[in-house]
Image (cartoon, rainbow, N blue to C red; front, side):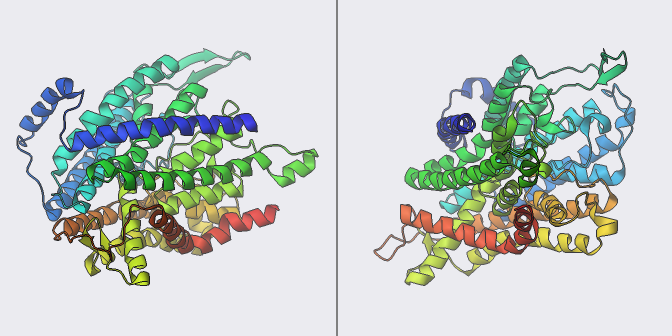
Amino acid sequence: MLFGFWQILLILLILLIMAPLLGRYMARVFTRQQTWLDRMILPLERLIFASSGLPNCRTMTGGQYIRAVLVSNLVMGILVFGIMMTQGSLPLNPTGLSAPSWDLALHTAISFVTNTNQQHYSGETTFSYLSQVGALGFLMFTSAATGIAVAIAFIRGLTGQPLGNFYEDLVLSITRILLPISVVGAIVLLIAGVPETLAGPAQATTLEGATQWIARGPVAHFEIIKELGENGGGFFGINSAHPLENPNNFTNLLETVIMMVIPAGLIITYGKMAGNPKQGWLIFGMVFILFGILIGVTAFGEFWGNPWVNQMLGEMQPNLEGKEVRFGWVLTALWAVSTTGTMCGAVNGMHDSLMPAGGFVTLTDMFLQIIWGGQGTGTAYLFVFLILTVFLTGLMVGRTPEFLGRKIEKREIVLASVILLVHPIAILIPTAITMAFPATLSGISNPGFHGISQVVYEYASAAANNGSGFEGLGDNTLWWNLSASVSLLLGRYVPIIALILLADSMAHKQPVPETSGTLRTDTPLFTGVTAGAIVILGILTFFPVLVLGPIAEAFNLG
């Protein structure tokens, strides 16, 4: 047990070192300061901007920024849907796979364009290499870059700057952040044993003399952007539990850190761009502490194991159901909290097999969406909670609600409320409909309290743009593909629209001078109050479904 927690501490220490370095670098990128990549990347960027008709990227209004996000994402989604539906007649299809059903292709296209990568299929038996790499891999870069661009625009607006240009931010996110790290990371994964080939499945002969076909493909570069961009969609059906996606403890460590480094770093980026590094570090520390607590709860739950199994064995054993032996209960618990906290959604073990404590934590991560949150959007959600906390505390102590020298008024509170309210709407309403017809719609494989968790988890994963699942659920049906698609769209684009409008509103406010009545937001006390507001507003919204699911399951086992 002690060795397991040392492994967790090592990964957290690496994150503490890497996130500030990347955060400061991203701040330089988006404030157009000189970086060490300029000599290599600037010619490529000039070519992209010139060929796209954007040689001089003008700053956009809130409405223009929103239209740019929606139109570009719509076009990319249609393009990818078309590739998947015609893959049977396209090249790079060594196993001769035909097109999937229209509803599965629709759900998959929406899932990947929203940076969710919720998969109702097994990649190696459903999609060709072209569909996986040329279509889904393309969206892994652009959807992650979209989230980063929105976060940067939001930070600019909060600090009174123009929002910037979406297309410029999109390109910079790819050329300066996602692509360079992915190239290096893919080479490292390749050296560590992750395959990268366009050859078809390998043929092997088993010890019994039978012929076995082993799926492979261009996995290494797909895997690195899967984690770095918080995409989570696996090349193989069992995702990062597959030995060709995540073969050993080194790759597991690399992939765990990589999935967290950008969302964690963006908090430091905010502090630099806002000219208030202290507040950035306080918020980083708050999230880090909450993250550590949730890891501890999950890890202890897996360490103590299943009391029914332990009673039959006559001794205490960790819960190893649904886990790869090479990772064990510790690294599986850490990964589960990391992947649902960052909205990555990749898995190195089956979440459906987690103990109730693990189910509680993974659901809580997706309900809160700020530990560390989605690619870019998680950082923005953090500041929505900050704005609401400023408003609430200002009302309680009789001080003018101000954030970064700008008044918080009705419009900002309405938009912040929309951002937080759309999440339970996208989860609880379809959950209620599904549970009203359990025999025909739900696909539950484990009746009882755990079955409720399976349904809630699927919609929470879709609405939070996470993509992981309690994979005992039979979700490749017309109902699940279409209903989850609605949650995917609501959970992605309604908050993005509200975030940009909120940032645009803040950017046009006149700054007010700080007085003795101004509530300071860069103090440990205010940060602690913010943590309390996050827990109260986030968890209590979903407390009834937590009681009906993992909490009731825990009491039942106990």
